[in-house]
Length: 90
Image (cartoon, rainbow, N blue to C red; front, side):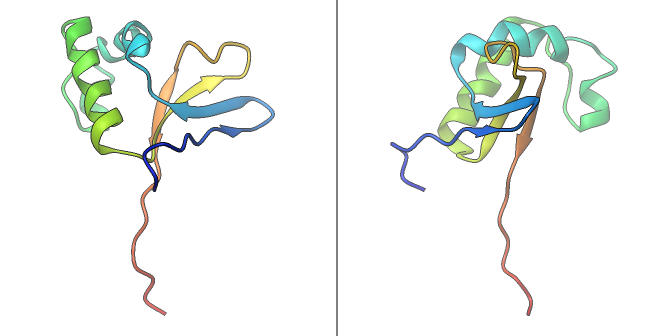
């Protein structure tokens, strides 16, 4: 993928878009819950700085990792999804 391209996916209810550093507070609101992270396979975030670091990793190293936002407020991510490709065994 060309790093200059931006992919945004829109449905009737959701927007999947690239992560922004400004999303750290929204991410932290969800990721600070100690019952959320471990279920997903990661430790809960203790500070907004933890969320900023994860967003930086998404931006730098995961081109198909998207912030999931409700259409009514695309500036407040409620989740995350990453699309991955793999070779097809046909």
